[in-house]
Structure formats: C-alpha cells, structure tokens
Image (cartoon, rainbow, N blue to C red; front, side):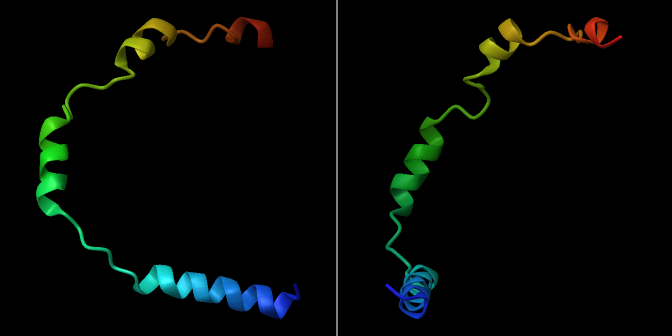
Length: 62
C-alpha cells in the first residue's frame, strides 16, 4: 500500500473519530460514579507498604 493510500485511510479514520458522537447513557454514568468510592485509593495499602520516606540509594552514590 502506498503512502498516499495509507495517509488517506488515516485521515478517514481520524475524521470519523472526530465527528462521531455516540449516545451516552448519563444515568448509567451517574450510577457508576455514585457507586465508586472516590475517597478510597486502591493502591494506598501498597504505597504504605513499599514506599520508604528515606532514599535507600543515597549512601551508594557517595
């Protein structure tokens, strides 16, 4: 496939994505947002477990 044909295909896809507006179920979106607990960070327990406040590698660099 030549460069012109490839570019035309990409342009067509980009145009479709730009002007495509799917129907949005706002009530479903509202239910999803209401059910998710935004205050709870699912990675917080791992951050506490694995992150150290001190830099363990600072002694090795000197």
